[in-house]
Image 1 (tube, rainbow, N blue to C red):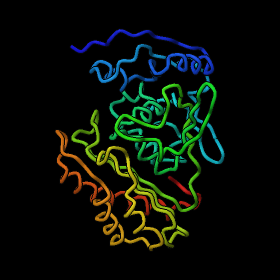
Image 2: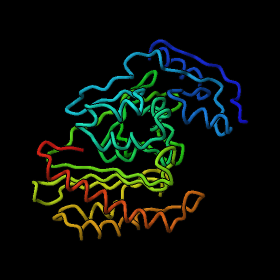
Image 3: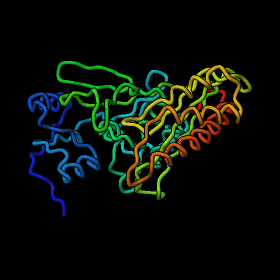
Image 4: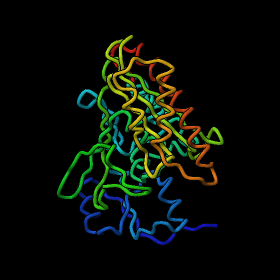
Length: 298
């Protein structure tokens, strides 16, 4: 039986107090939200923080609100709240779909959107959809705040550009342009409690319902050290008139944009085949949504 190592537990009552505490700890502390990843990693011995800093008593981190024409989601909003939110489901159904794919109901009730991001797992469910949506992260430190694109946040498995003294406070998602659609598909061995073998999020924006593709985003997960753009596929789609043949061509190109490994969940060759299949499916669904949505729907 794996046991947790010894640690001190802190519960600051305000964000400034928490940021001051993390600054003083100089990398020896970690923020704990739902703990679904952190506590498991501590039991495995892959991380061993001397202090855990809980933000559950800090106000303002559990809200979903309108922001700059889009939405701002507090970092401590749970995955189940995102999956069940009428606001998220209406404005960004691809995010609600990705949230509903994460683990079991019990895990979704504890896991948070912020935790799913900052752990920087290559197979995390929410980052592909959020990257496709153009999400930004609001990071706060003791003496400096910054907002960065999620697209540039990850640097490798388990690593990111966030400093140990910073806290992710909000995820900001801009509204989608008109005639925008998106889809997310996760492939696993089981319907629940499964880490993705391959996952794909695609988003298309058309200039009009029967027009050309003016913006294409194809995000691949579990086939590289971080979630990545299928850059070659995106270029092949942009400026073209949508068709099943075009989507098939883009999917075959996307296979060359990834670098999957072989592990206990699947071989590299199988993952490449599934990238081809899932890219085609997500592009077709994104297109069908895009041409039906005058106000944009991602």
